[in-house]
Length: 331
Image (cartoon, rainbow, N blue to C red; front, side, top):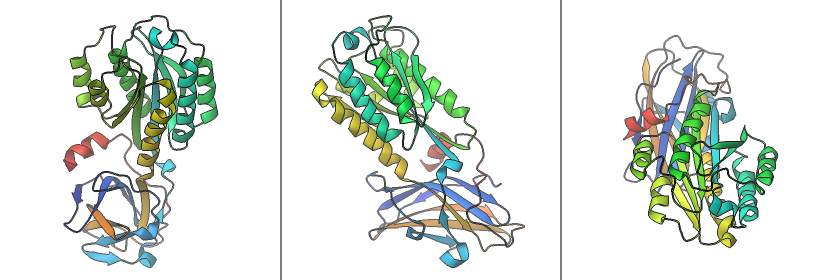
């Protein structure tokens, strides 16, 4: 298996799609597999593309679909996404009479996200530690059961350890993600809260320092008038939603769920058979959508390659989350 030699995003003057190459698998007899995302120039995810919406070039020359046998592979063989829903169960939430509304909104959130991610639900109050309500699973029914039980939950400490809970949640997400047996692993944290940190275990500056260099996507959902929208936005690096009252909770949860669901659809795992049989070559993958294009390049070594290639062969990506390193290379 060839390690990623270099990664570059190329968006020409007439192009308006961004193709972000996450990783590449190259193996004998002559298999190449590419895991990448496609977005608009404004960052909107592009889903629903088929194998024929991509063109493959080697050393500047197009490779025909008949020769490459290119196919879209099921990403589940190599990719896993974990999403943690972290729910505020401090006194201001549990004593407000809003738990039913929160649980219902969270259930609708789970219906969407569990289709594409492994979902776990954790809670926090004023205590130092977060609590697991249900571990990561692709079963929306199991998550719903935990959320049903949450309707009557009472925290052990009525204070709000929001900052400390986020730090603990990020560490737990990374632990679970890094233990996954598949090579490409991603983590998303969704935080629901109705207020701000009161416990003081972790300061706002310490939280920002923690999140500055963390390889976890974070969304936040706020409820009510005590929310500091600036802090909500700074913590929710990938996005946030504010519900001014419980009547708008469903929309806030649905908004974040849609963002996560759509973001998952922008990823593609494309396999093909290279006609190259020796030496190093520059591969370019080009995406097409409604007259718009975008592309990315990668260099690979075809030494020892030959016939009898099955484009659907399981890729051999290196085990480990490489997202953070690749982002730095692409910057």
